[in-house]
Image: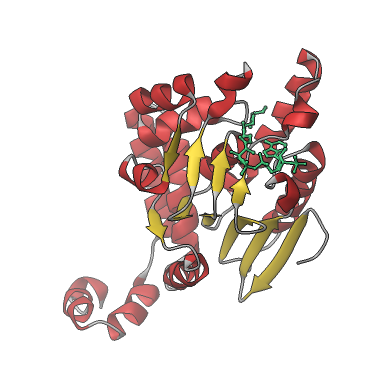
Length: 263
Ligand code: HXC
C-alpha cells in the first residue's frame, strides 16, 4: 500500500480506490476529501472505465466517519464549507457513468455510511458495523445521510438509525436494504470481481442511462420521471446489432430475437 491518502489501482478498466488512513480507521479529514474529489474529477474524464470500487485500508474499517478531531472545533461557517466540499465529492460518485461499489470492510459509521450510501452498490463483509452516530456527538449527518438514508431504507428506519445513533451489524444492514450483499470477510474482492464481470457483459451506455433514470427520476414527480425513462430508453435504440450479438450466445434469446421484428 502506498503512503498516499488514496491508493489507486486499476485492472481492465476497474479502478479501485482505497481510502488510506488506517491508523484513524480511515476517518475523512479535509485532505482526504480533497484528494478523493481530485481522483473522481480525473475519473470523470475517462470513457474507458467499467466500474469503480471504493474500500478502506486495513481490516478493521471502511470509514469510521468524518475526522472528529478536525471537525469538533469548526465554526458554523467552517462546518458549512467542510460539509459542502464533502457533498460535492460524494455527488461525483453518483454521477460517474459506471457502477460504483462500496466494499465495506469493517466500521462504516457517520460520514463513512454516507459515503457508502452515495455508491450504487454496497457489499459488506460479515463483520461490518453500520451506523449514523452523529447525534451522540451533538451533530447530525452532514454528508447527505439525512437524504440518502431515507431514500435507501425508508424514512421510518432512517429516523430510527439517525435519532438513536445505534449501530447495526451487516445482517441487519442487508435486511433493511442498506447493503446489497454480505459476504465472509476475505471474500469481498472475489465477489467484487464477479460483479464487475457481470457489469462488463452489459451495455456501457445502458448502465449509464439506467443510473441517470434512477437517480434523476427519484427527485421528480412520477410523470416527469417516466418521461425521462422514455427518453433515455429511446436514445438507446437501435440495438439490433447488440441484440444479435447477445442472441448468438443464448438459445432462448435467439428464439425471441430472430423474429421478423429484428430481421
Ligand atoms: C477521527 C477516529 C475516528 C473518527 C476512530 N478514530 N474514529 N479519528 N475521527 N471518526 C481513531 C481513534 O481516535 C483512534 O486513534 C483510532 O482511530 C482507533 O480507534 P479506537 O477508538 O481506538 O478503536 P476501537 O476501540 O476499535 O473503536 C472503533 C470505533 C470508535 C467504534 C469506530 O473509534 C468510534 O466510535 N469512532 C467514532 C465513530 C463516529 O462517531 N463517527 C461519526 C463521526 S461524525 P488513536 O490515535 O487514539 O489510536 C461524522 C459526521 C459526518 O461522521 C458529517 C460531517 C459534515
